[in-house]
Length: 193
Length: 327
Image 1: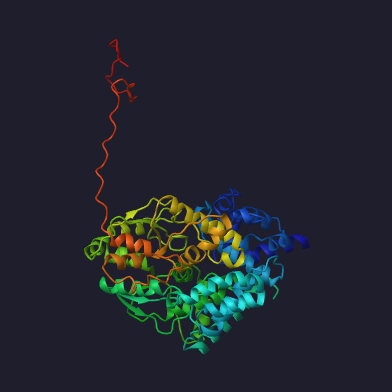
Image 2: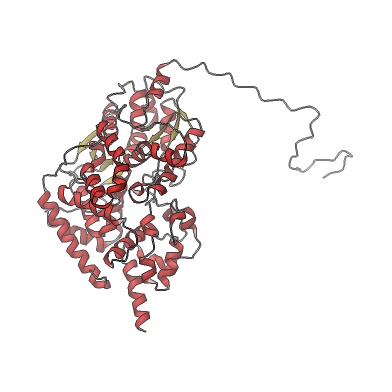
């Protein structure tokens, strides 16, 4: 019984997103995985993920690399005969994997660095993003990617200084409130911080 | 017509070629762009990974900044376009989401009622509002002889924003034809460039990039024409690294459709941002500058041999066989 309860909770956490209630309509047809440009690199295709989700395999789902390889191309979404918002579910699984500290690959660092810039300036700042990301997380491949950054700089495609929006205080207040509400919604479905 | 304009971070610098050429073209086609005051980043595909509601709120702040009286928002970057479109759409669909977002916006004394504006891609407003006829009327230097591969990528047409087919879009094809170019049949036109995957798993990304580049080259395109800064950066900036991974030597410029419009409208290439690309577009400009080769006479269809067997056709009532029996 306790196990059954646990399954339902994890399923509800994933299905908590707008449109998420459609997951249970999955037919296991496999169109999603077959349409996925990065499907070959996934350990489980979205179809498998949904089956695992129904079976309550929380740990296995969260430790899958599938959603980290999602490129957000929405091919699966337009082809899904049950109109399941698969891409949004992939986002939600990334979120839950980070919350549960269960992620197996460090793909979240890029997103976190990017969002950090946005939360500081209100705009993205490519030079800061690339420098911070590669120096902090991937100093070695940073050398390889450095040629790209240099190419951007010499072609005048990368600003040297960030642009900050005027109403940074307003934006910060909004994001703070949004995080507060998000936390509230998480508690309602039992997501641990 | 007058549009609210959301440039997005890329168009400020990395994709300045897109931003500058779009503004110039819109001006020629009498489309007035009113840039949103103090707009912020849309969060790209990153913020939605980390936290859904703040991500929606970040996007919605831009929608809330749209001045009263403007009904259409022009967004040239496909990722911004999708985020803005999706936020407006989902706020309309899910009351709880709408109220949560507006509670957050209120902290900055803003609010947004879903459906107040229509979020539209730059391609949509140029082709569907100005129209191909008006565009063709502005062409001073037709792109005759140029073979262009129309590349849409993902987010302009998917999930489904209603202005073109999610898998077989044609808007850009029609536009390029109106400019006088030869549109290459490009089966990967709506395939994915990899988005942010070069940062996560370069090997995966280079497979996608290589395939897109190789297909365009094999179909003898002079350039891949794109409408998204992410696609442009991946196909152009990582073309050399994708070549490395596969031992190939492809070299095909990746240009924005607005740059091609600028060329056709007779604007100076430099003002259209030519020269900012990694893979030089100079060969394409040279080809355009040299007079196009005379049109080849269409070859006559080979005649069927008189001795050939008859072509089978459907039997109709009244048909008779050789001996006169009705079939």
